[in-house]
Length: 405
Ligand SMILES: [Zn+2]
Image (tube, rainbow, N blue to C red; front, side, top):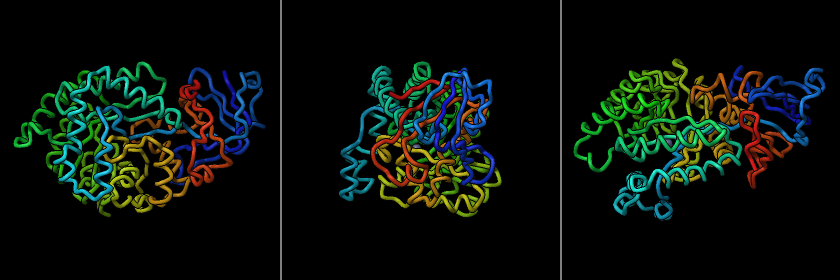
């Protein structure tokens, strides 16, 4: 049994209350054993029976729940730095694609990479991600686009889960885009997803969610409905990349199928938000993608006002969001998403847990929950969000074990 003492402010981030309720406790202590929290409260009120627990000194720093990155594309072959420069020079998406860029270039590199190469690269990235305070990470396939290569990515996540203490939440994203060999046969690819990929992935327990990119350049609403219904029949819970570049009705579809989350939403309609609120679909903002693609940011205030819980994630991928820094995503959510630091912290913890159906186990510091927490060397939450510079993260714990260097 361990007790963490000398916490200046503990931000417990319990679910109760609106987006800005993060339930802070000053001069706090927390007790955990066997990977879960036993007691949380003011240090002066620490019960007698915990006095003999092994003490850990928080050194007067703040403590928050482990950050949850609920939307990443962690496993991929290659990188796309040339495309980054082309975009800055103002090259069109079409020209970038013609020069061999875009999602399909990552598909090519991912197909060419061996399982071992993909594993080593993802493991190395994950070690860095952990140092930034992340204790749970959702990770998608979607750069294979054949049964074999989608499975290769999902098996990388399975092996990572075996070797790391943090939680990985695998998502099948075979419907990321139409691969080139099916460019004249959309129906053929959708049939492959529905009749081969989804049944195999579900049967082998390789994913918890099924995601789809709903966009003019990717999949239509009707195609998405077909794919997500098939996923649900096989026990995969739906998620959507929705309304990023245009209001294509993605949010409405997310509500219709009862999706766990709708992500991006930069162009979402008021009607879409209303329906998401009615079905309790979490809205996930991905501001790093807006930063790198020079697209408008999602005004998260609109979602909160419409009664939609907002989560924040990095969307880490080699094209539109080549950063896995949750602190950066959170700072952008404050400055461009117009959420306060408190609202943003709730977005990165308990509401992010909700976006991956884990809110009963993680996302807040409460007795019974997994002992995932981060000690940050900063006077308070506002200061951490405002002073964006070198990492102020002092120590990271997952399941009660220190996992940072
Ligand atoms: Zn994404």
